[in-house]
Length: 68
Image 1 (cartoon, rainbow, N blue to C red):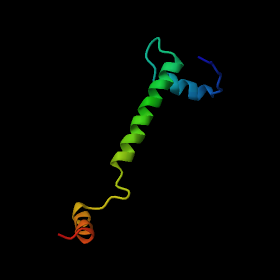
Image 2: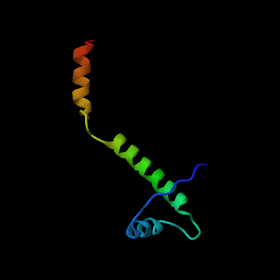
Image 3: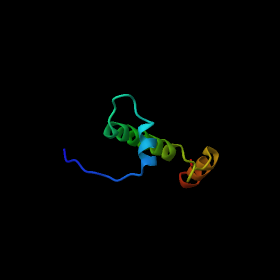
């Protein structure tokens, strides 16, 4: 695994460390935070009502396209 160095303010470093558990590395903390952020983004995407139409409207549109 390649290792890199990133620069953070002391304030940011302290905030990140506040999410950690005893003995947990910054790498582990950041991976856990990233995983939670990805899940939150997916949840927001799936639960978004953007582009949503009520079922009644969808049925009317379907009946227009495919009359019985």
